[in-house]
Image (cartoon, rainbow, N blue to C red; front, side, top):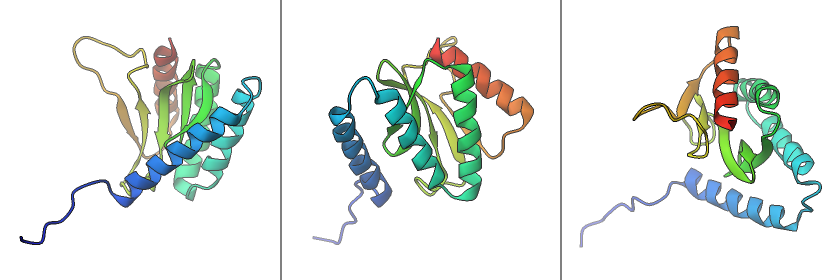
Length: 146
C-alpha cells in the first residue's frame, strides 16, 4: 500500500476542539448568575494573549460589540472571543494566528439575523479598523443581534 498522507484535522483544528471541550466543562461548572462576567473575563484574557496586531483589533471589536449589542454575552468559542444570545454564538473574532491565516476575521453564525435575499456574507476579513469600518461593524452586529 502506498504511503498516504492523512487529510484529517490540522494541529490548529485539534487545538480548537480541545479548547472548546474545556470551555464547555468550565461553563457547566459556573453559576448562571456570574456567567456573563466570567465570560467577559475569559474573553479579555484571550484577547490579552494575542499578538499585537490581532489584540488591537480584538480589543476594539469587543468595545464595538458591547456598544452595538449590549445584550450579547461574551464567551469563548473554540478558543475565540465570541458573543452569544441565549447561549448561542451570534458573532466571533478569529485572530490571524488561530489558524495561521494572513488576516483576522469577524464571523457570524447562523444565529445572526443577517439574512438578505438568497445570499449574504457571514465572514469579513479585518486588517485595520477605520471609522467607516467601525461604523459598518456596529451596524452588522446590531442587525445580527436583532
